[in-house]
Image (tube, rainbow, N blue to C red; front, side, top):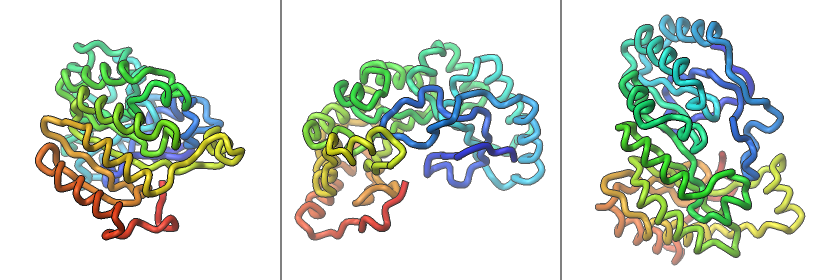
Length: 289
């Protein structure tokens, strides 16, 4: 397989065939992300991608999922994306789900009918970063879009019949806007009503603008306890009709996995127990991106 640069994927795609069709991220301006710094976004040649699919057809017959990378594969032109999905289904007929990352910008390039066509062609899940429901926080981290737009695009994905997994980031607002960040993020998730929510905890990287701000005393990182409080407030403000709320990423201090709405009260009680010190938090040395 032809892999160029750093390849990232959601934890749930750990056992998937990773198919790189783009390099980098089409936005690549978020101050907290250091994954694609110095990488110019671009599409990989179709011939290279086709060879990778042929390799997977010969060597990855036990894998039942395909995850298309890099940071925003949904930005591919519709005709090329449909052709890609068709090729995957023809050459890897045992695959049961195809997923990719998509941001609000790329989703906005697709009409509802476009997304429905992608679903019919085999696209099963889109992973999208909300990060925060607070517009001031989104502006501070250069997300490039307002929360309402992200919510609208997430709802478009859901309306098209494609599963939606949304990422939010504990600690992103710093200490000053911590509670506002938690409340508005939960409210945004409620309106979007995704199938899955993944709550990660902020880890500052030295190669990012936010990491530089922290080193210079311009960003106040919340403590582990304050991140737990954010998680509690966020969960309390999140109403999903039927979805999974995960905070079991390697970055999190307290792993949780809740099916909403039925597990909500029990999970909040678990967080309260951790806040009281009855449940130990993950040591800093064991956290990872």
